[in-house]
Image (cartoon, rainbow, N blue to C red; front, side, top):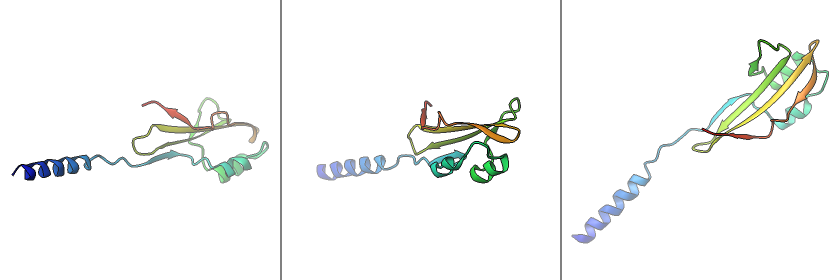
Length: 109
């Protein structure tokens, strides 16, 4: 009788530990691929940038000549990682590429 109870206890503990919640991987924003970023050049027009990178996730209404491409990614229970690429335009052409925040940064939740 005692061995049956012990086996039942271990079986129930085993089944309870396998009942953890599953969290889906979440990807949001523009996919910032290294080969596409390497193709960005000073002097490209907005159509060329849109063809290469897609539409910017953020367009600042106060700074129409600034495009922000943001990508966030969270795998399961890990912390959220973010990449940011900012392009500056003058007369419809890229004049500056700010990739200083392109390295993945971890966001606290």
